[in-house]
Length: 479
Ligand SMILES: Cc1cc2nc3c(=O)[nH]c(=O)nc-3n(C[C@H](O)[C@H](O)[C@H](O)COP(=O)(O)OP(=O)(O)OC[C@H]3O[C@@H](n4cnc5c(N)ncnc54)[C@H](O)[C@@H]3O)c2cc1C
Image (cartoon, rainbow, N blue to C red):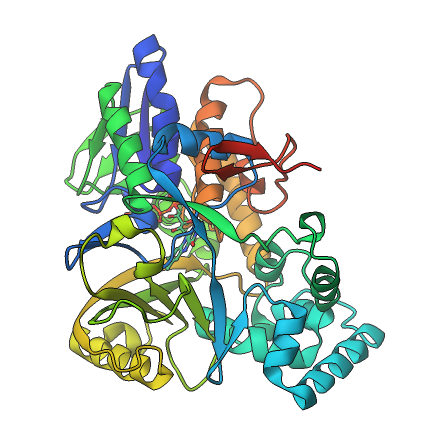
């Protein structure tokens, strides 16, 4: 059996890592990973910058799933540390805990605002949105309109570029889950771990050499097992015959035959280039929207700027939405360097003038904004670099599910093709979701019982005992 994997991000590289064992057993005769860029790790790669290591914005790995955590530990071995998470919201020059803590939020807003927020919450309890299918209605029902406007609206609109009443509630239900003002107050009153909401996790495991080192290690193992990784080699299209996969066409003009293909290339590109796709499915695929990110890295001549790994910037007068401070992850990232690297995130669409802005203008904007926040005090910006990442956020606009469903159903009719990953399956995945998709797609190739990959990061729950990674290994988090 010849297998090709498209994309060397967490999803693709995990699938190939799991399959590579079968090269030795002889069940697979050829395993190739094609990666259009020059790097392993996709959006989760790490980069060397000014003699330090950085990620593409913040990259915290976290999962409760023993399957994902065991794989991560198997790969990372002992090369990780536990980081005490601190991530706050920066709003009107005040820091607020994130995830929101009731007493901290209400105290930070001042007595008058706090009273209005509580009234607004009670009002919403009495008169909730009947249909909480948009981000605005979903969050307002849980926090009240006033807290929604302060803590959710500006940030979400910066990120997604559309008003929150046109954003599907899926984004909120995946990321905020069961948290509400009521839950937050309950947590404040009963601080025991048992009452802590799932998103209130205050520690995480981080690889000593950057998040990308996990995927580089997997790549080494794939090659050691006899697989091949072809960097700078994009897949132009998947070739099918009678709705069965027969091979790939590469961007260097070559065509190669395969029996099974696992794809993490952007779903819209895969579908529009599939030879037999009906016109209406191609049209639906083209209507899916991805948001781009511009990362502005600034090197600051100080080492004690602020203590968070990253900050969410809710103030509407700042264009940046998030600021990462790589000094606060693990010391191995900066070694003996006596400067801090900050990363400011700007989000835009292809058609926006911001996507065309040159690097010098972005560095000037980042410098102006970081000084405006007051976060660097007397520190000076020594240098700047810009990294652009197209199509990195699949946009859950209102109605996206109706467009996605027929595409999923059509792809399910193509034999021996599996689609996985963040832009591969149009899912707002974190690394853990993409790793799980990789594991499950590999399992699907040999198992009779097929995992439904579309459910991951939607309906998928951890059925086994749930666990978290600690310095001494996995521990169960079941009561
Ligand atoms: C700014 C930012 C911050 C994030 N923070 C976190 C975080 O804190 N925690 C967390 O867990 N996750 C975080 N994520 C999400 C995480 O990066 C992704 O979930 C993860 O990288 C997705 O893996 P993937 O393999 O599905 O997709 P990707 O990482 O996008 O990998 C897909 C790969 O396919 C390649 N490819 C595309 N087209 C082709 C083609 N035609 N041929 C061959 N190769 C192709 C791409 O170059 C890429 O390498 C963040 C993402 C961003 C952008």
